[in-house]
Length: 176
Image 1 (spheres, rainbow, N blue to C red):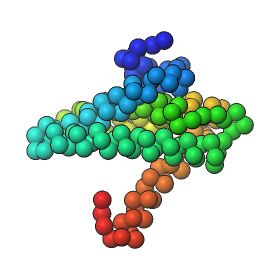
Image 2: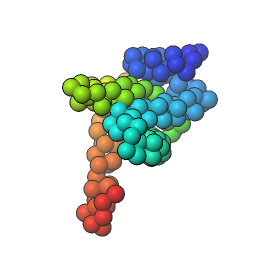
Image 3: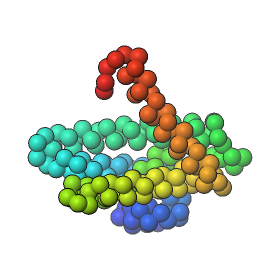
């Protein structure tokens, strides 16, 4: 069994075996949570620094990321097991929480988003890297044979994640 740091590096290297390992290891949920927090703190530091409300922003970013992680795992579970299952699909939200948590490992690079001249490139590359990791995480957790189906689950979840706040803003006139 791989240690925490090895799992983070393996997840960032898009190693399928690591995603299978964390999917099967129920004790890895706290590790996945730690990855989510580390990635969110790195992003907060990279985007706002530690000055001008930085500590408050870092804490709020961490809390928001944890909530988003749980909601995303549940949505992915519903979409992947109820809407788009393959015959061999068998998963639970814990498996998705673990694999999707580790899929955020590349997000630690977002600490460099505030570096002049390279920040936007870092953000773009980190976002794409995390998307690929998420697709692999979904494919492995849902036991899909098709990467395209995993991509479809991610796209549908993303559309829902964008549509709900937009609908709330339109219907209530209140921004988050």
